[in-house]
Amino acid sequence: MRELASTPPERRAETERLLNFARNLHIETRTLEGADVANTLVEFARLQHITRIFVARPRYGRWRWFLARNLIHRIVRMASDMEVVVVADRGAAPPR
Image 1 (cartoon, rainbow, N blue to C red):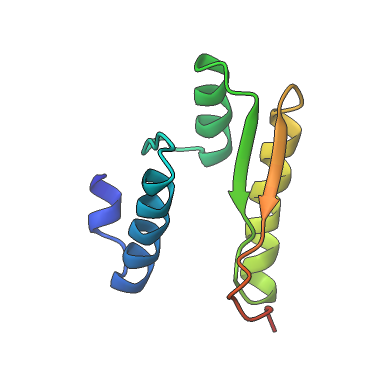
Image 2: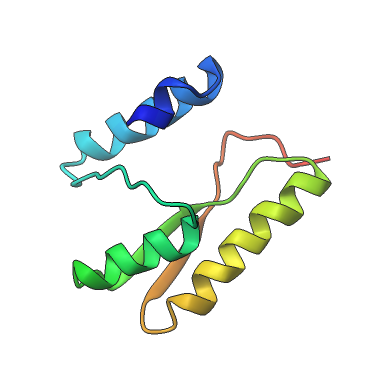
């Protein structure tokens, strides 16, 4: 989790909150490292025989939303043999 230590405090806190939430539900969590996020995630899922990937819907403005959406689309394309679920953060304000 080297990269987590270098992230901005608010993003680090959000990531830690989500990891703790998953762990409290007894969901195994892993932190992956790789140059290509989509490829790293999908290849890890295949190696672990994972059939369902959950990704969070990003909470960004229009331009950053487009970039994050592109990441989600890449994951969906690459994981054609898996179910990809995009989860909304109900407490988040809609992007402007």
